[in-house]
Length: 125
Image (cartoon, rainbow, N blue to C red; front, top):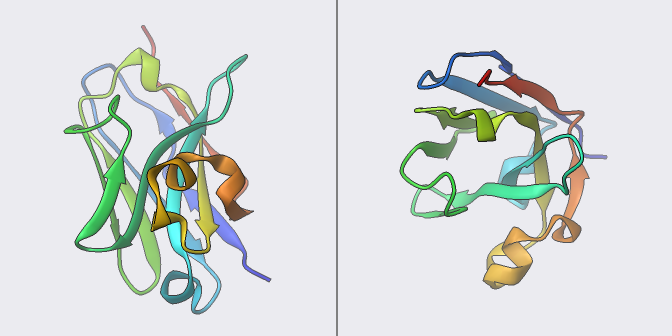
């Protein structure tokens, strides 16, 4: 059973930065593609970024150039810079099998099999 645990959320002023981390049970990162999603109150869960390897990453247009996803043996991180009030949401780490096979699959929450509990990011307007 894959278990994902997010951390690093908090309150930050607009223009500031946060770094989210996701740790997983052993061998998850070598067996699965990893993604970050977010969900704001009253809105659907939306794709943020995904990673398969250092050279294989993908971002939602809304975060491109501001967010960076990375991974090492133990952690998948999401570095968030130039944060905006629209970035406020609960952020979820997710693991999916071969989600990089096409863009539609990669950005759909239904493609991911395992989810963390989420971490809150607050950016006051």
